Length: 362
Image: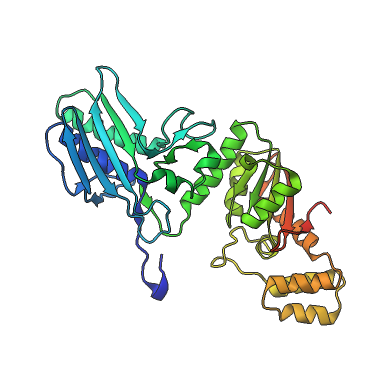
């Protein structure tokens, strides 16, 4: 992937990869080999990154290592966070146990990859850390009875900028990652959060959710339909990602709520609504005004408009229900993605002030 001036964007490492590397460094110290610095690991797809240590401490029966997360050129909220892993010997037969230290969340709701009461450390990072511990223990003729505690200074504050509070993860961030690699602007963490939000809603008995493109549409749809916070999915631009997950994991009633410009893209067939990946087709909008009976002057002005909002203003001034048409066309596109999934779908279109200007049911 390239950025400004076609310079390649730099990939980074997940919190899970950093935790695994810190685990290896701490366990090698605990078992008597000392802290390797930098410390290398092998990721699930074969990459072999090395991580410099920013913290190394040890005492009787414990060792601790810290690594600063480098997300590369991705705008990841956990970029720059310090992932600290403390290892302690466990009781005979206890196996490998995971603990949430300060700044790492605890799961309180069902529907996530780990059950309620467990630290918010996802399965792949757990597997990677466990394999590291077992490999080193076997090499030294020891049993892998180890407690792994992960902490992140400031993690509670960082978590406020994530979906964790809404997902019922309390006390801090999650330790995530399936490949260990952060691909710049892939937005994999956001899509993962969308999927987790749907999964938690299903597991907690929520049967009516709303996927919203932003804060204005979120507040508007909550006020209009009386939905609780846990029913709101912050889908952002990723309507396609949300719909594809719903196709496999349906919820009975779903609202897609967003601004006129964003949902005009959906109505035109786009499933990624980001400005870099899709554009409002003003000619397409003008053509639909003709279908609504607009005067030629209005159609001409719409074709030459600078923004979708200008087209909406022209249509409203002429008394043309362009918002309802966009909502219906958006529903048609979304329904085609859902296929035969048992989902009752509605699309609501709002203007910038949060006023309803389009309803697929009208």
